[in-house]
Image (cartoon, rainbow, N blue to C red; front, side, top):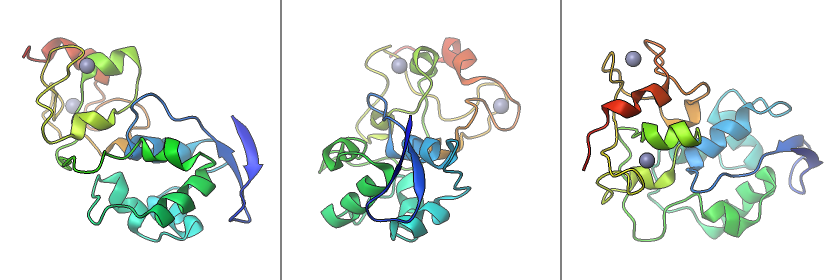
Length: 173
Ligand SMILES: [Zn+2]
Ligand SMILES: [Zn+2]
């Protein structure tokens, strides 16, 4: 992690590295919360980036209209990433997203605790890696998962069951 002053802003912000296949929602949540940044909501970061409420929509996987190159560049500057790297956290053109419910492969989460973008692809029937269906709610209390930008601790926000403990309840494809 390093701190840097962005070209486009007056702020010193802490840079974080994106993880392999990480969704933009999960990444933005981590970025907002990391020490030194502390944007409590997407709207706060949106203001800094000059993108207003657009970031809150992206955190919910609403990509219609699709982010413009200009918007991506504005965000890339603030999060201090190459725009091409940032772009990888968004769906490829032509890929339809399933915005709701937020999906989880607990087996993947067990290996590395973050939300993968491809879990929300509409045509994705389950996890290719583990050959299981995704979970859409807590296996203990049936509460739907929060959007990934709010996955601060990786557990059900209602009953506290850890995501990684849910893997054994995933149905094989
Ligand atoms: Zn998996
Ligand atoms: Zn629960």
